[in-house]
Image 1 (tube, rainbow, N blue to C red):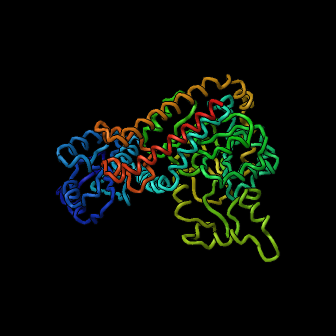
Image 2: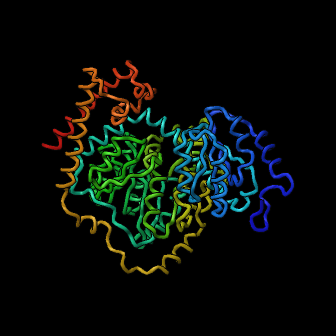
Image 3: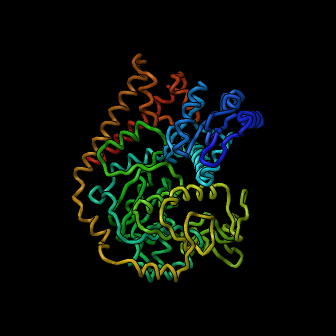
Length: 517
């Protein structure tokens, strides 16, 4: 089989090499095998027959002229559909969606049974990396859901009741170049340049970096907050009372919304496929759904790219120096400085520098597996944008063009300043929040009605209560270590669910009483 001048299989025994390769591949449990450019699908049946029942096979083709050939050949194999799929699209986002829908796996393995990968080698490598990152993130999100799922929902309900809805507005687009600021050590060297050019940029900062910017005399245009726990509240201390736009997850800690003044843009991390989150998305509130990205830096990168402007990046390092984990002026840095004595010198930072899993990286920086995963996620978000790297060679690689501060200043000088507008002025011109508060109240009342129905049905043993109905209340049991037992209608699990239903009734009643007062 040929594609142009390139042979995709041997001219003499085209089945021999792929069949041998299929036999040589280790058949591991809990593994997603991604077959790149399956072409005529030689060897696929042999490989699939060897796979454990916990593993699956996914065929992907990026060459449009080969896609229909691969689809027809794959269909003729008649493999078990639940564990084997051929993606019927060449768009990477569709392929990633198909990979996510087939399930979560312990590992992802690339399989080459033809020469088709050579037609788009870089794109295939990027795709495999993206599938791997998404899969790791899915597992991490599941573990985080067990630990924080209950808190997320509690915060959502509390925020719906307490938010100053007249300040909650849709995002206002910017026509300026965007400066994305993380809280890594590389931000320090950029601050003088950033202060000089602040009026030429829309500055989007993660919450951990916002205080450092404010102390340097730089007011960020938007501060991104994701944290549901109280740990990140010190990030906002230097911002107390300032007028700026807060971009926060609806599941963020309620105090995050009270510390800063100014407009609020809301996002909702879809931490699970949830009836609760689906109903919230359809509640008529200005809340933008986003994937469960896990890191505020990755979320900030996604929001920055959505502006459609050229983008500068600093502090988004996913790396650190020994004894220096964050930029100067960040809450972590300030906390260590407050503790400093003759015998205590950045002890916590030095302990983290030699902690479990810390590895040396190119350029002398340090990192770990979690930071590397988030760097890969940030790379996926930034890959299609026009990004310039101001980190001075520090940090894990991002799909960004290195540029000096001097060159960045020259680039800004070439961009016309007309039509910039004011983000805050535009946002403050929005109408009052009566309709939003009414929509929030309607959502909470509906959730209370549903929780009361579930509680009655569980206590009376209603025969009409099915697994499909129970899935509508997934937020009540998603944090269980064994949520599948609830959907299997196991008696002990349903008893635990009844306790949860009673708890959420009280939370919803408290929220509604607050909203009505």
